[in-house]
Image 1: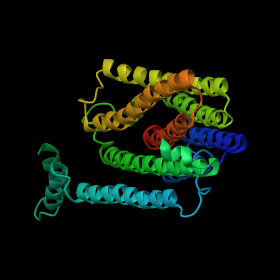
Image 2: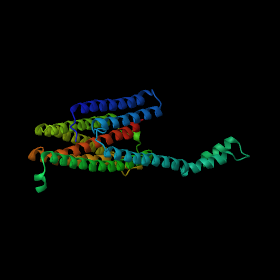
Image 3: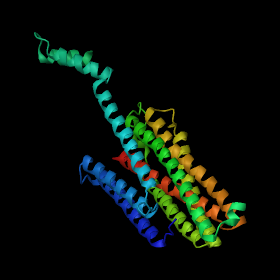
Image 4: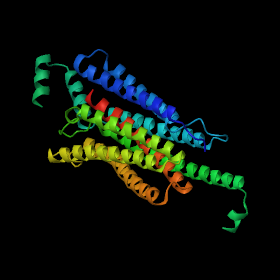
Length: 133
Length: 202
């Protein structure tokens, strides 16, 4: 094994602290002041987390300093692929499941829509009927 | 024993390095499978975190500065375990014990904060039985806490061995794997901090 020096640890530590505080600062700013939109804040803090992942992988776990053949890197990339697949596919499936099968709520929305399209009644009567149902 | 005695010093070092690489690789593969567990728990949390069943939502529950302190403590402990590793490579026994002792204390402080948070939630009536959101929250953060607990136990045992036997090569190997485990837990926590706490209060 290679013998690491203290320098990468200090750099990694400082970078991690800075990235953490930055994410915290952006979120607390958003809660009080609303400078950015919700989507932008989410994207920024996720990017900061991924940046910190790479900082710690390189500076703490010394990835990329491995001798060839790089089995550790290979396994890491393979498993990262699996995890991305599991997380993204689960979210994708569950989102569509939620959207298309919202149960009671969706049923109510469809009934309301059909009621509003019934001919022969005034709009106000239909609104009242929906509220009283 | 006979085989080792017939080997030259260089051959012996090569053999040790080879064993070390195999150990390291095996442990690395274990960490990756552990990552799958956390990946699944993250997916579960992401799917269920809005189903609060009339109970507290993510916005009501989280105390962001508290979580920030937890994060900073764990980050520092990750750093001190790295420094402890350097001292072990330099064969400085006392320094190694001091830095890993510091790591242990920081890890214990983190665990204490987490347990405080959990008991606080339970006393408020927000246990894991309350809603799907809280079940997934306790499953994700609790699994990480369990890893931290076992890491602390492991650290205490290895430190006791270093104290008694000094920095032998098998013990340096164990310390390396231990600090690898500790850095790994820190990385997982960064994502818990981002996905659960930061995105929770938005």
